[in-house]
Image 1 (cartoon, rainbow, N blue to C red):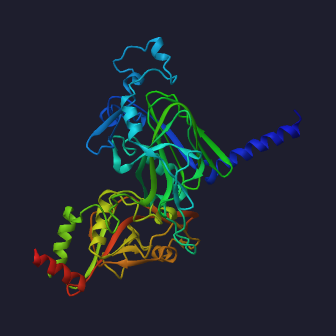
Image 2 (cartoon, rainbow, N blue to C red):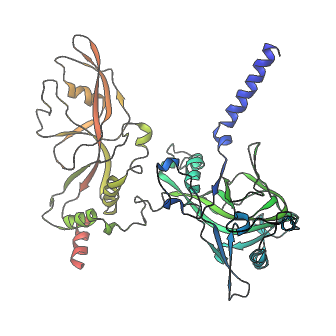
Length: 481
């Protein structure tokens, strides 16, 4: 091979790798499998959780019979597929007509009899056409299952793989983004489907999103042996083929964006049984920052104590400011992280911020600089006693070419590049937490050096005076109790 031909081949390989690594190509779908064991994953933790294989118990499906009076149950995989206490199948059993071995088909037959033909969406209408889709279904209100995609890590994997690509500008004119760090995935079970031999299939199609929040679909293939029925996902000229047939003892799954084309090849033997979920992007499920949080704020001691204090004329009657030093570490001087705060707050910091917001108070994240001298060895301003240097906003690391010499005033250097204000009116709660570099600048002594100054993160809240509408409302609520 000539050098020019070799270079061209290498370029083509690099081009394909580059294309495959792009946002639109690398992660338009993701898939995996979950081994089935007799134990719950969370009951078998022995060592490092990072080295633990998540597993599932056998899947139990219960559904309403057509008579509306009885319920049937199916356990997957069936005993002979799992080899749980069963004798090896005989040659006659292996030669069963479906080519997959003899199994207890009674429950499967009940399931097939109780399912309805599966429809598909076409121009906003539900259509029945066996030439396009041949399958059976049970709607989510007709059956129940012990399988939960959250329990086995599937939703966590989707949130890490597909959700970041869903983060879009909030408005066309806005540069602000719906950061994936602020979002969670909600998986809503839609239906159970059965694709049966010899012609169960679903031709290429696009799923119809159920609302603006839906960003994708999750399909879970339950452990019932079959041949054929491969799932093919296509997007942007790329195709991914998931061959799910004839695999014992595992649950297989695939998730993909709503704008992907989906196809299910013909099932040639047995039955492919799947669960389908719609995937929605949502502010963290149960998140404490939601206006309609699933958490009752009254369950927090901080909420009850603050509410009582605000209702009392003995607590800051003329109003004031409280400052809560953050307990956990945040890269609060990183521009990207700044944009995710306060949603990225953790633990007690998240509780503090959400409690203050629920009381309808003005609350913000700010940076606080400590141990800052004025160039003459004094750690505080000579004009303001016991003051803290508090930023007027959160921002990234500030790099300044404004320096100081041995007799220069360091405070002015910082104020020039890191807009703060001196505050001695804040009632501080807690101690300074994790430090992050806030300002980098030059210093001139015997030689030029680089000087660094650090800040910590804090939550600042304004308390209105006792005669304000907010506090009067709290006083009335307190008396009502």
